[in-house]
Amino acid sequence: MNIVSADKISKHIGDRSLFNEISFGVDSNDKLGLIGTNGSGKTTLLRIIAGLDETDQGKITKTNQLRIAYLPQIPVFEPNLSIRSAMLEPVSPVNSITGDDLERQMTNILAEIDVTNLDQTIGNLSGGMLKKIALAQTLALEPDLLILDEPTNHLDAWTNLWLEERLAAWKKAIFLITHDRYFLENVTGRILELDQGQLFQYDGNYSYYLEKKAEREMAAARVEAKASRLLKSELEWLRRQPKARGTKQKARVDRIEDLQTLSKGASNRSFEFDSSAVESKNRILEVKNLSAAFEDRVLFSGFEHIFKSRERLGVLGPNGCGKSTFFNLLMGVLTPATGEIKKGLHTRFGYFDQTSRDLDGTKKVIDYVKRNAGEILARGDGVVMEAARLLEYFGFSGRMQQGLISQLSGGERRRLHLVLVLMASPNFLILDEPTNDLDIATLVLLEDFLADFQGCVLVASHDRYFLDRVVSSLLVYEDGEIRRSNQSASEYIAINRDRGHEIVPAKAARTQAKAQEKRRLAAEEIKEYRALEREIETMEKKKSELETQLSNPAADYAKLTALGVEYEALNKVLVEKWARWEELGERKDG
Image (tube, rainbow, N blue to C red; front, top):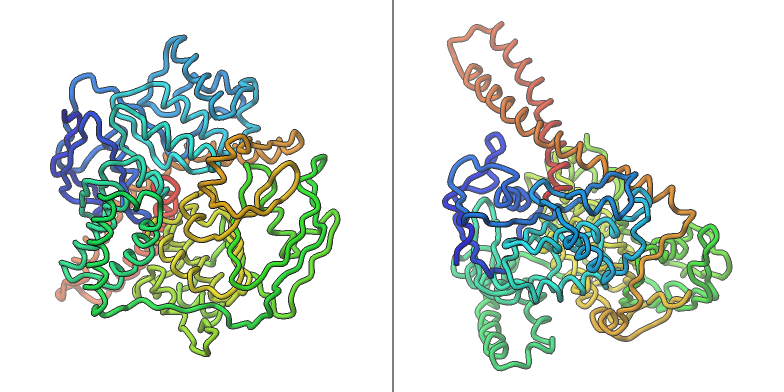
């Protein structure tokens, strides 16, 4: 039975269209995944369905007494409350929380994900813990339609697995945004994709989506290289998974191979290269008896390893175990409690951290890259790659390259930071939660890049799919040590379910409180985001009026000069407001 129907709905910000006259329905047992590039309007669409935002045109129809629960991407709680009190305050105005039974249900769900001390103060908790509380609230409501915006963000890998299994068994409708491709593969039964203002629907899971999207793009003679790259990087990998042994999946694989044969003659605008400009011996870094402590707690001790070329290592451990500290020790940023680190003569680190560094918004994208990272990326075979080509590979068109950094959205700045790291031609690449704020298309490109990377890769991530794709072995935090495991991330997490307990040192409360304060500001930023929409729309109308007046040949010179000054001033302010709107939008629309 159809419980929600969207008929030719549109949403615009000023003269910019997020989506235009799109239509779709949600059935009572649907499990829908919504995907699209950063800033494409995914969160806005979910908010419209939840009743928290309005369309500019078109109609949303819902069945009578439809119960909806909505989980925002960034849950915000009053920092002075205890967990027990906070969980009774709805994280979304859509959610209505009443009754003792509901409170007991929330408590039971929290216990399943290792949250048992309900007297902890919200202000001392990590983003992952806050997400767990918000999830418990939302799931306990057992609505007719469960709407989830990036539910896996900030969660550890163990909780992600728990949530995936719970949602796979969910009996009612689900509509979610996620970049977690295991969710899209194992939970969703239908995928909606927002692409350049249009909505495309695929009646299947993630592998089905990849196959049909490639067919659609090839049939339309669009971006053959992109289709080929998706087939190579995603479908071939999925083919090697246990699911591929089934007859139905085997038939799909055969069709995929036919597509690959057809795509061989297409003009390939992508490229393959490595980043071994700095030649190194097999030993890039040697570590002996390394240990580290944070205030009164030992993070790990006795770690020893020789990092080598072409090695692919994933780092797994619960939140708070010290993964970022481990990276900074290896790079020499921090001093270890004990141990010795020997860096190779030609070892060069590339560090893609969780937040990305500040970028000068007054500079053009291409100029900034050339000035800070050089004009070429050297390959190990003597071939060089221009900065513009690498930028294009990671989604920066020629127009975007000539634009100011201030005009980039948050996700686009994250991608730019990735390009800067890679342009430095490292031979030891460290990735700290690289999937944060990157859309699926960019993750696929990064995975393809790493497949040809000649140096050592060390990556910490809660994204099991990304780890399974990229790494060949793991470094796992176990009982105060960092140990080697040859299992895949999915296998290790499934087998060792008892190792996902978050670590929050008592003396780290001040740090956690500061983080909570930042999250509390998110509510104010949402208000600012809405206000900017109205301001931009008004200013865009004024800009159009000025352009009309400036194009009038009968106007006198003095008037045209004054209008030109006014236009330039308005446009400067408008660019700044667009940049701020994009930045805020990325935080809420990842």
